[in-house]
Image 1 (cartoon, rainbow, N blue to C red):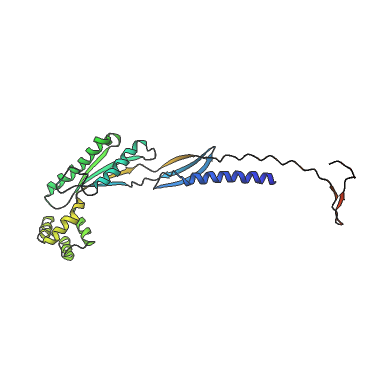
Image 2: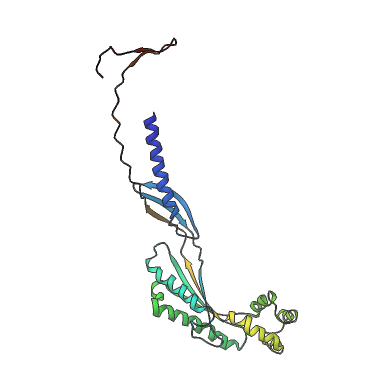
Length: 267
């Protein structure tokens, strides 16, 4: 029984150690994944995940007023382009991602003529698509949907309500009124301090392009990790058995009866 328990314990220790080592470097597919099963097959730890369609990849690039050409030195575009390049460049070698579609949406701020804003929004989106196609031919690989939108004065109101805009209450009354968009803009422009704040702190964030990557339906992904088993230690050689000069012949309740060797016996 002792031999059986020792073998079983050793097997559990090796299995748990291997599983613990693999778990420490768990190659999970990432956010949105759920571990379904985990089993050992030969020298591999096999995990199956449910990878959910999270659609959580998104990038934002900003444009200067009236501009339709992307500037890497404007706002945080340099950092965002670096992140975007790293992501797009990894797609061909990433078997865990299943992209359903890519949507590029260009925006324009609500100030200015509506027809010009529509043109700005669309040309900004097309500018980003051209950047991706020239560098990665992304349209051929995945297809890209292009959209254009003009941000509304309601979008401006949300920012103003949470800010320290000069004369904030007066600005909110203008934005909440039944006036036309042109009349709202004219009223805001007449307040010099208010318009300076909007022009520098609010409106620039609305001149942008949003890039959204939508993943496919939920799917099951199998991840295999090789188990590095520990090298077994060599079994030490048994010590030579010592010869005994006496033997127990009876250990009854009355005491030990020991057989002593005869005088002159050789041991």
